[in-house]
Length: 268
Ligand code: ACM
Image: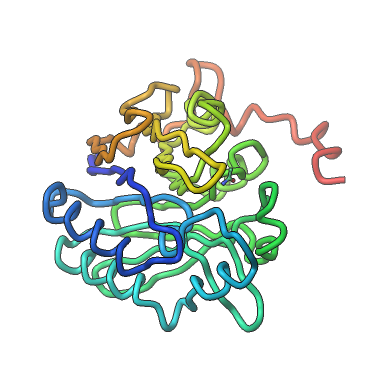
């Protein structure tokens, strides 16, 4: 057994108000986080909020990964509690914005993923991701990241699983009621990985976010599901050896039994 403690913080980042978001997080870390936790996931666009009224607001609420109050704050918490944190991040790079997820640990910023599949109006603000599907070694586990609407593309989950991740961290701002949250356990099952979907709550103008942040395990089990509306920190101890075993039956293996000879259309 290789047991680690994983979880999410479900809350409402404040649109274009990073100081307020950090104040909220500060209280949540104080109240709920301790050094027994190894990995925490926060929602999509944690530093900025989601429903930008204009490209200007998207721009002024973005940060670069090298100069970010939000990343500095998260690194401080990671150092204080000796854990790793993944969060959605409105990333500025040159004159472009990306809907990214960042990974930080006790020694600082580690890396990022840029959302590949942009949802609805996100296409007005962000460039599609251009960094592929990186994986990261956090010591006890290999992790990968997807962001929200990526959930509906099974290829992305499979690529991360084939690269050897134990856990897929999935910062989200879900608005379609319950669809993703009921599908994520199937992605976990079909790839024998753990999934942490950290969704947000609250409303921004015409969008209501659907909560129900979910931690799912390699046999498709829902290990934790938050409420639809409450601020919540969900924590579960998981055995990583379950994610490393790809056997489905005594004579079936998720990876070895794949018929790659007939899957060519997937990449055409
Ligand atoms: C979404 O991708 N934020 C729905």
